[in-house]
Length: 404
Image (tube, rainbow, N blue to C red; front, side):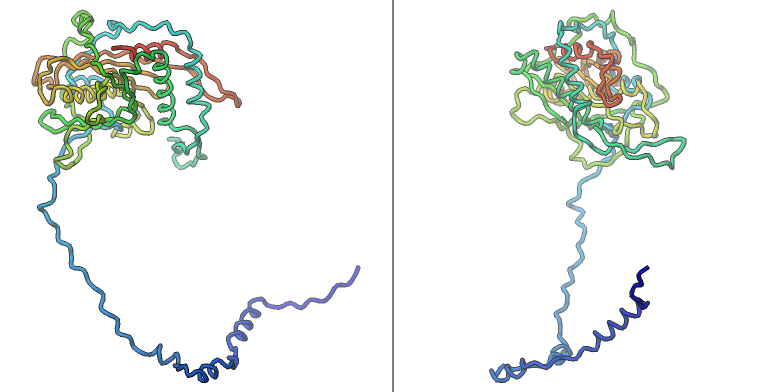
């Protein structure tokens, strides 16, 4: 072996302490700056004389306290609110009592399926919206009720809202492409917000609901009762009895300025094609929930369709006829609710804006059964798979869009 150099051990802390002691005792080097300044007759002042001189600073201005002017405040009004994140506790029966509506058999409507055969285009829309979109966002946390403290890894992918928006926009665009003659009479709005104030059981109620996709037309929809025998196909002879519950149960209490409880619609002044035709609403599992932290059921989803259609129909009635209680002509609104897989189609004919206690006249409501667009649409072993496609869903949606 070759002998190496003998190294001496030193304490690193002592070395740094000694280094700072040496650097702290530096001697000032004499330079000729002072001499040169004196030769040029430039006065030199000692820095300590300037630093030790006391300087009087002006006092800091103190602002006077702001007094609250009660004359400029607006009056807050307590009211009940039904919005996009809320559902009715008792479901469809409560919605029927609230909206003063009776259900008519859906098979009485003339919704004959079209002879559309290019369902490969619909499958392409489904794959492009749910599988091939490259947008990635952080999805909600995964929780296990049996292990609430366990942290699952975060999952990235498409959110429910984006899936619904992409799929519905593509399907509506496909319907428009198949019927180009309707483009001159229709318009499509996105995120159309409606505020409808009304009174129920002596309390102010505000329906603040959004139509994620709203189809408007230059012509009004014909009421289905003009060609359907309502008395023969009527499922509900009278309104359901939900006593001792009130129809305003599970609505959220809120306070708003009095000037905010007014009708709000997405139509601007001078917009010609402003007749509400079909409203497509999204059912997002991350947005819609019970106020009691319980999972929503199928009956509550049905009630959500009726409440949304009722709000859009009242807004349309007030736009046409003002705030009159009597409608010269019924108002018809079509509603489609979907979570990008299951679709619920419904039609509401608004005959009166009064509640059930104020009149014996009833509104008519047609509710179709739930239909699944597909059974499975996901990646399996890295391959995109679409199984169990149901062509009846798009055929019904096409019939709704072509209705006039």
